[in-house]
Length: 183
Image 1 (cartoon, helix red, strand yellow):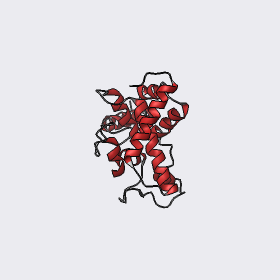
Image 2 (cartoon, one colour; image 1 turned 120 degrees about the horizontal axis):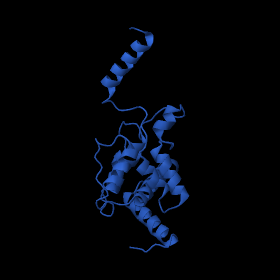
Image 3 (cartoon, helix red, strand yellow; image 1 turned 180 degrees about the horizontal axis):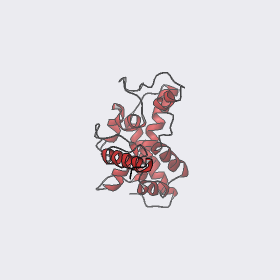
Image 4 (cartoon, helix red, strand yellow; image 1 turned 120 degrees about the vertical axis):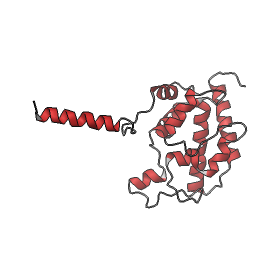
């Protein structure tokens, strides 16, 4: 028997079958990553910063452009004509390549494989084989953010070695603060 309800259910089930391999627009950050962020043995400021990174809640050029605050979303640090997304700022901008490939960090960023920074972080947590812990990654991201702000607002030149050293100094002081042994 044909009813409007049966027609609607048929259309919806057909639509769901056709779209089951497409990415969902309601992406949720993996619970393990949230637990890792909120259980980090670090300052609340760093946990909040990492939460903001994962929620794309930082004032990147792209976000400011989307809110009609800036007219141009293009990255001013690398002179490429790409929007400064959160992924570009922290992972894909050429100046950050030297940070992630630094001998003390040694993380390879696959430029075509990074679509969401929170997915990248979750994958790092899942595949910890000799990789740095979440606290170390958070401090590196924090120092990249600070260096970017100093570049944009104070015209200080970008120095990847200083970013790595500052992140490692933050980690060491955090260990001392939390009573952990220094390595």
